[in-house]
Amino acid sequence: MLEHGGNLRAAARRYGRDDWVDLSTGINPWGYPVPALAPDAWHRLPEPDPALVEAACRYYGAAPMLPVAGTQAAIQALPRLRVPSRVTVSAPSYAEHAHHWSRHGHTLRLSSYAALDSTVDDSDVLVVCNPNNPTGETIPAAQLLDWAARLAQRGGWLVVDEAFGDTVPALSVAGHTHTPGLIVLRSVGKFFGLAGLRLGFVAADESLLRALADLLGPWAVSGPAQSIALAALNDQAWQATTRSLLHMAGRRMDALLAAHGIAAAGTPLFHWWPQDDPAAFHEHLAQRGIWCRLFLDAAYGIRLGLPADEAAWRRLARALDEWRER
Image (cartoon, rainbow, N blue to C red):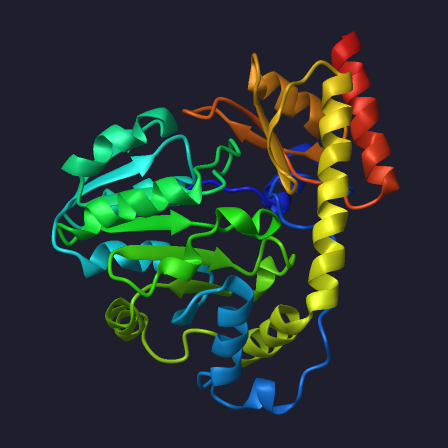
């Protein structure tokens, strides 16, 4: 299994402490307040709820959509829906995409964001994260739609992972997925802070969604997850307030890092930068009870999510002071 953020039990075992400030995931630290659930949400088998799909289509501006048990479920399943293909995955990026497309007989190639356009015409599948995780790079919607059209002419796919797209809705191409060849993945876990639900959505043409649903099988999303997500997707007031809050917190993180000589990129939910000896920086923060995301491969550097409260912001500021003064 690939390593990801949020592994606080491993941190606790390694460092012998449990008072962590967890900045390792990029998940909204002020998650949606979970409502009380009807008793039958736990008792009944979780048949699909059309109201959930309708709410998702409104929120993401797409139709049709398929609920899945987190976008990870779709990332693992989509490579099984194609015959062996030439697949290009943007890099550095969310590592699960390349990991699963490298299996099932596909020929995998990794490409920098700057070189992606030159790969379209000799690829059958192109996979990008927009915004990118972990670097925060973005691709304009018009560029993505051009790539999707070029790929679709040959029966190809453009897969766009918009897991961190809620704070920059203008980047989304989910509204164009009714045509074949364009597949968009959306996550409830990041912006809504509900990663434990394991719920996401796939936007694509109906024939592909039917094939994906058949592959994933019945009861793919739990009843409680459907009920909670329905409330969150319909709560426009919470969404607007939270989007503003996250942008303010993102600017605060920009300023804090810049004050310590760190030029970071990213989104309101996370910041990433290339770091000399990132393992030493990671260790420095860990010794002070701050768990960040360490990258030692193509995205050689550090990623920080948002602190949840003022005490966490102060701890991070002290740690950055001490790193600068060492």
